[in-house]
Amino acid sequence: MSRLNYRGRVEMLNGLIGYKLGMTQVFSDEGKLVPVTLLELGPCKVVQVKTLEKDGYQSVQLSFDEEKEHRVTKPLLGHYKKASLSPARFLREIKTEDSGFSVGQVINSEIFKKGEFVDVTGVSKGKGFQGVMKRHNFSGGPKSHGSHFHRAPGSIGNSATPSRVWKNKAMPGQMGNKPVTTQSLEVIEVRPEQNIVMIKGAIPGGTKGLVIVRKSVKKQVNAGV
Amino acid sequence: MNRLEQIEQGYLKKDVPKVIIGSTVRVHVRIKEGEKERIQIYEGVVIRKKGGSNRETFTVRKVSYGIGVERIFPLHSPFVTQVETIREGKVRRAKLYYIRTRTGKAARIPEKERVYATKKKKGPATTQSVQLAPPAAAPEADTPS
Image (cartoon, rainbow over all chains, first blue to last red; front, side, top):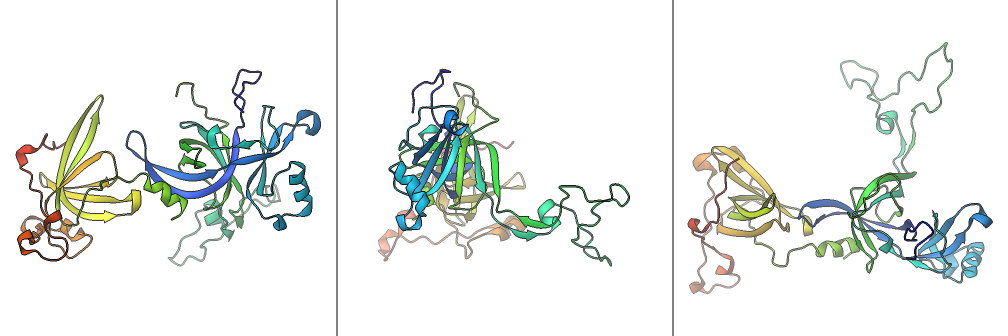
């Protein structure tokens, strides 16, 4: 996992899956209180390696957590059997530019380092069917003084032109319970022996929710930091 | 204990400073000024304790040049190096917010009657009673900003 690839970069996976454990605060090295989200990341096993030649793109399929055999569908069981691995609760793919991963390889939270930045994907907490005030921050109408207009969306467009409602017009509907990614969050601490990763700030979803943590797309740390 | 609580345990101080509501304390705070590090002392009355585990904080109130000042310290913060108890107050409340509206004589808190070891009462006696520190022993006085 740590050999160099053709670009001289250390070859490793840039993402991992795990559970959100909840939020707390910890003291940083300078002694300051930092709000953190605790994540239980990995250890993940490589179930399948997808290659450019065979699949058209490069990625690694990871499994996380254990699952009883009778709870897994037969086609999926066959998939695990092919990799000669025990069934897992979750299967997720992580895209990678590196090759050299092998089926059955165990990847743990060592791939993240303190001070790095990551993007965290989770499923946000479901809020149900919500109106425009909560869902899209509409201001609504006056509460009193004879007003009959309180939380309604109001006009949704013009009449003659365009004589239809614009696409993506903000309307009431299902809020939350959809995949959300929060970008550029700092890694505060990594404890590979406990599979614990601490990330500064909040991440989408509730406690025990599944999260995918990837190295940040936008924010990189300079060498030496 | 869940895993979150287990991790929090690791951030607790080994010898937690004893902070009692209503007591007058001297909090030794480590202050970094550029390269130098010094200890500043903040003296006042403990009016509130809040939170649990490594999130626990306490609030110390004092009146500085006629202005009420309240400072919140995380109990387990490495900046809080020591908490000396000067006197224990006799209070009947867990949160002493009523002190904010009072000034002068009305804002006093009566001292807790001390239990002397000679009486040999059951239970904790003088073990945590009073540590009277002479004011001259202060490394540096608190400077108003």
